[in-house]
Amino acid sequence: MAVRMTFGRAVRSEIVRVRRSPLAAMHLVIALALGAAAGAYFASSAWDSLLGADAFFQLLGAGAPLIVGLSCGLSVDAEREAGDCANLLGVPSRRIAFAAKGAVLLALGFAAALVAAVLFWGIVVAAGRDAPSLAACLAGACGIAAGSAALYALSLWVALRFGRNAAIGLGAIGLGVALASMGGLANGLVTGTLSGSFGASAAVFIPFAWPSRFASLAIELAIAGLLSAGAQVVAVLVDALVRIGIACAVSTIALVAALLVGADRFEDKKLAGE
Image 1 (cartoon, one colour):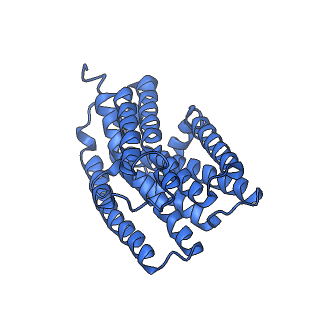
Image 2 (image 1 turned 30 degrees about the horizontal axis):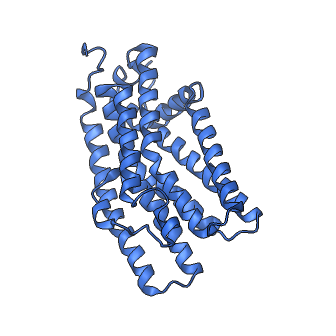
Image 3 (image 1 turned 60 degrees about the vertical axis):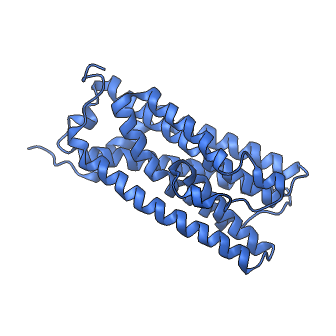
């Protein structure tokens, strides 16, 4: 009797494959390195540690597109090498298989963001420096995951259609675009401003910028409260968060739906002779 394919079974199967791949270790090493290095730097430097936290979360979010591209590219490449993507394209329900892979990769990215965020916060607080609350840092990590969901759907499609290198290249472009949309690396730290709402009108239409925006705005709302920045500043930050949030939610639903609806028409690029 054939075992019915369910989302839960597909997720468990995907977790087993991820545990046997270098992806989990890659995420952990990157998270520990970023969290520890940034935490140690802002715990001991002359920079304002609150704005330093904002800069860290901006960088963490800006790096999300690259991590997404690496994850999707390497994961699909492993599926291709293991059996011409049979676990994705040769199963009873491709939609369930795609949804499971996307969900597990997203959870892996979220876990990495959490590790980096908590480690950074712990080091800065242990040094006696000012820092946003732990809840704000956790919200920043959640924002990175929420802003990345659409990118996972897009990068999975790119990896399947054009291959690993295309997905990684797209992620690298996304990193640059995200940093540029914030006015450059650590713009707010250098200028001494809350820069999360900088260029927010344009950022609404830039999916690569969403993880860094959500993370930065969550942190800046906490900083604004600590500094009693005033109702007008808070209103600007909330307005940017709402506008980008709506754009992100609508686009994510549309991209995920398109991926799942078109799943039955996918062809592995290797099998298609490309």
